[in-house]
Image (cartoon, rainbow, N blue to C red; front, side, top):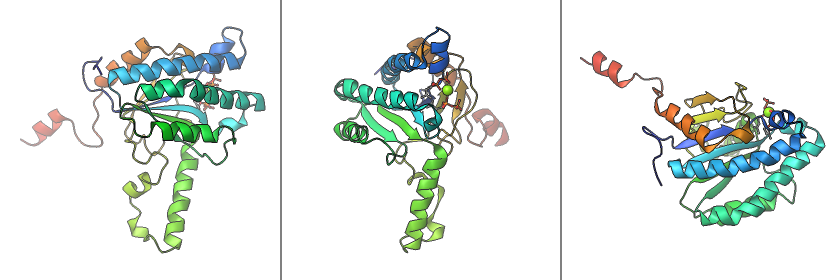
Length: 248
Ligand code: IPE
Ligand code: IPE
Ligand code: MG
């Protein structure tokens, strides 16, 4: 594992992989070709993240709102995830990658769910980078499901209301055990979070890049990491210089 960038490497990078459709449209191709090309960018991104020393990489692959797309596109996206797991699981496992899936699994097709569970189970003991795939994921849905669980624990006398702390809520989310993202990247020039990790990204650095997802390269990723290394994160406190001056 090499530190390819000078300065701090984010422990957790989360990416909103956007722009597949526009990438295809710009080439006169059907949207599905953009999604296909996007899978190649996923492979390269996982490799780059691991080699840069990133410990958690979360990829937003399908949102809880993406069901609003035409049925053929939804089927295509489900099929691509299935194909990715089938083709790449052995390789990812060999590379010591641990896979986690976040999102509501209940609504997923019966041919997809077992594959996702198998990917998590097979790689559970791996100690390399954790690849978190956000599939059928939406923050509002995730928080709502967590609150329902907490409310039910309270109703059953297992939990007192005052025991519901921010930490407790964090530990009830799908991302339980995963540190908050240090850096959230969105490709395609859109500057919004689209229901992605809203709770977890409270203090994340945000980066909006113009590239469509299929064009997101190792070079672009490393440049983003370099730019992250220059950011000054304060978490509501004061920076070192201000603290030193203030404490005189
Ligand atoms: C991102 O690309 C992939 C998913 C949301 C699944 P889009 O399909 O959103 O591409 P654009 O934003 O329409 O270009
Ligand atoms: C966000 O992209 C979801 C994923 C990348 C999976 P969208 O393309 O669905 O977001 P909006 O609709 O432009 O906000
Ligand atoms: Mg989009």
